[in-house]
Amino acid sequence: MFEDPANDTAERHRKQGTEPEAPDFAFDPDDPWTQTFQAGLERADLKGKTVYEVGVGTGVNLAFILRTCGAARAYGSDLDPRLVMLAERNLRSLSPQHAEHFEPVHGSVSLIDTDDARSKITKTDVVIACIPQVGEPNDLRLTAFRKAQSVELPDGAETQAEDHIAHYYPWTAFDEYPYNSVGLGLNEALLRRIRQHAPKAQVVMNFGCRIGSDIIFECFEANGYRPEKLASKIVHQHVGTDISFFVALEKALCGTDLEKQLVCKFYADPDGTHPLSATDAQRLIEKDPHVDLYHEVSVIRGIPIEN
Amino acid sequence: MQDSNTIDCNGLSPAPTVLRIMQALIGRKDSNVPLNVLVGSDCDCARLSVSLGDLADDVQLASNLRQFATIN
Ligand SMILES: C[S@@+](CC[C@H](N)C(=O)[O-])C[C@H]1O[C@@H](n2cnc3c(N)ncnc32)[C@H](O)[C@@H]1O
Image (cartoon, rainbow over all chains, first blue to last red; front, side):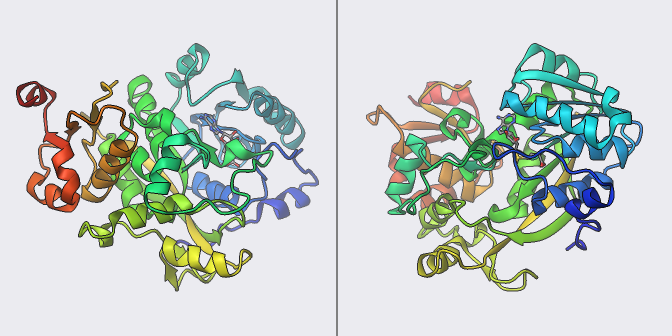
């Protein structure tokens, strides 16, 4: 396990006298996920590199890679078109001297699925991303699978927070990707696109390891990348983030003799010493919806394997 | 893209392979013909069939798309 990310993001912003603009529709830039991601980015040898961030959110990572990691140039886009404009504004206020090193891809861009995004990806050395790894709770096929395992959606799981698309992805739409079966379809789709358009680019991606890091590593290898963990932290499971998908996966494997090959990884304590399966975690949530639960967040670098 | 009766499980270890097959069988429209499942050449198909239990009757496993044409 790695040590905690050295500097708390919020603390760093306070010291510098700047706070990013963070409306409700953007992922909270002070979230421990972002702190962990930045701890990994710091170790990713970005000095002098051209970096593309898929899913820029508030843009705090763009400021971080240009200012702290010494990246030479940054590109970025997001599925929510408001966010790339927010990122531009935040970069101008957090690190004005670097603002001109950022070239945004405007509009709603899923992954790198526009001509402008693809053309910038071909000029990129390192692609970074922290994009959803849980299927949309209302997805019809996912609902059918969950119901077949007799797993109920908890009350309130269907209500959408302002930053809903920061947490969930349309599961059926990514079902052509094999690792969609464990919630990695959107991330696998990104790996395949990068492999196709920038075969020499490295990737640095942030994952909630509720599904276990082994299977995330497998996904990298299956898509032609050698994975390595750059940073890791045990974080609070967001109260209200639906874990029924993970429970359904465990239940589906009951009686297949493969149960031990996929046990989700939650923890009862912030040190990560008391592991819990998703089924155990769900039982605790049912008793007390505000129970403190934890899981690992890891930053994984993928180095393309030469063909 | 895969055709709607074929799923790609190439590269998946046994647990996610079984999950993917279960998910595909639940969402399927035409259940009269077996579901084609593309697996890696290193797949232990006999063991996979045991893990699938009764569901094994609803699938055809092959490591190469051409094999489905011969089976179906
Ligand atoms: C968890 S937030 C991370 C934000 C920021 N990168 C960070 O690390 O703080 C995920 C971001 O990915 C974006 N996103 C979700 N689905 C996406 C997709 N298909 N393509 C591009 N971005 C996506 C969301 O709008 C959100 O800004």
